Length: 63
Figure 1 (spheres, helix red, strand yellow):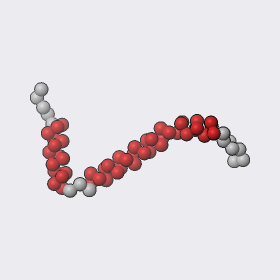
Figure 2 (tube, helix red, strand yellow):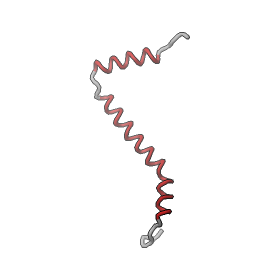
Figure 3 (cartoon, rainbow, N blue to C red):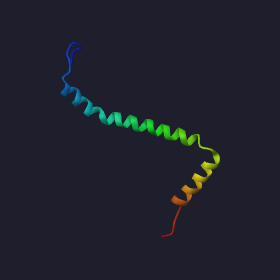
Figure 4 (spheres, rainbow, N blue to C red):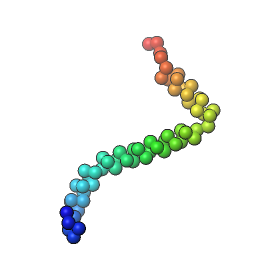
């Protein structure tokens, strides 16, 4: 497309739909970074309790 051409609304919508998965992935990464930052700032007592809960939930269990 030349600089002097204008895009029709349908073309814009089609390009947006094609690139939407990329935008969704970028958004998911940004949210994950925020979650990781929040966990990094967790008080040690809370972190210790969370570690205990995760070990209890994810540890080996006899069925």
